[in-house]
Length: 505
Image 1 (cartoon, rainbow, N blue to C red):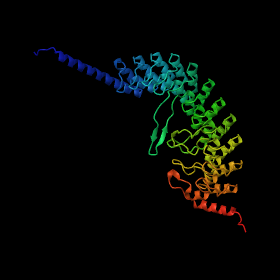
Image 2: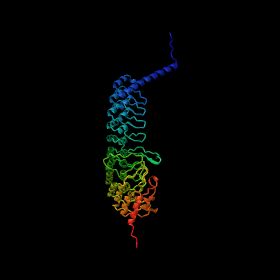
Image 3: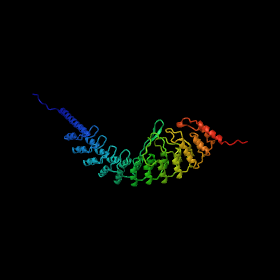
Image 4: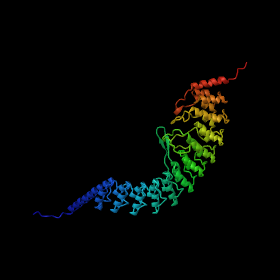
């Protein structure tokens, strides 16, 4: 008979390791089958596997448990079955997401309630500081928000990256009922996100600056940017400060306008937002609305999409009715936003009327003039609205084609001339409107000449409109050689000949 020998210490350790591995493999295999059964919704298989309760909380490789799969699938009965078998409602996956967070993401009030009753922690946070209340505010079911608030969660908690609160989340996603609940439970209505500091990034070979918001935004600013008109109304009714500005001096009203949210902007105006608060460049709501109405291509920005009932022209009219100053002037060219090189022809002293004239927006020009816009105002360099309407800067854009047609530009010129502007006014370099028209538009040259424009006037460099037509007007598009317009030159010669004084005897 063979003798039996007790294992030594090394043997004991080896035996323990083997037994541990077998236990883990058994549990892992059981858990794998349990997760598969939960994913497929096979309750019979789940019940059979839950007879061995040891594996109910064993996670998958990424930390996901069977309960998380059930909650993710919105399978309330399966979640109850797992919880009854001892599933831990607070086990997070490797990203820190708990079953309760998934329930809030799904907007499932019943699931959230079951998890809370089973001991889920409503104050748990993701690694970045995002709370379950923030998730609920983003997804917007007020019943879920109410359940969490009833358990004493911090309504003003901030996530780590941007310092955003639950109310800001509700504003971003336009959940007015959730926002109202948060405010009723003490949400700081004028709280600001973090102020952000970063280096300006030059994009591409052209060296275009990438400009990002500087943070320090209120919930109303988030609502304005997103066009969350429902939450904007809730915030305004709760007496949020409508006139706070971000570090660039931009109000919620202007944020709504530059993002083409006319209805939200209109609501803010009607609730008392001041339309005359300018940003650091002096741009206030009226200029922003005029600019947005005929906004050309913005490099790096997708095409605008409109779903609002009010048009940009409606908004311009509303702003004027509520006291917007039609003669407010920029301090300098407007802020860069997204990837845009800015507009150099619209510098210090530019008015909303000049901006409308730049793109031949006759409808906006008439509306502005009818509300007191002064067509004789000049930029610091002497540029007039007529010069812009006549074509100053036209054909020189680096990234975008000219916005208006020649017919639209002519209509803008006609609007100004019929209001009695000086067709022979000169800028700081001695150029007149017809100098600029000679670079781009025969119809405008002819119209100006018919209304008294001098065709033989010389600027500070000695150039006449004819010289401009023949290529002496400076660089062309993107710095290329200027276009020689022989047809325009012929027209100017013809007009000069027709207007020539009779020779003395």
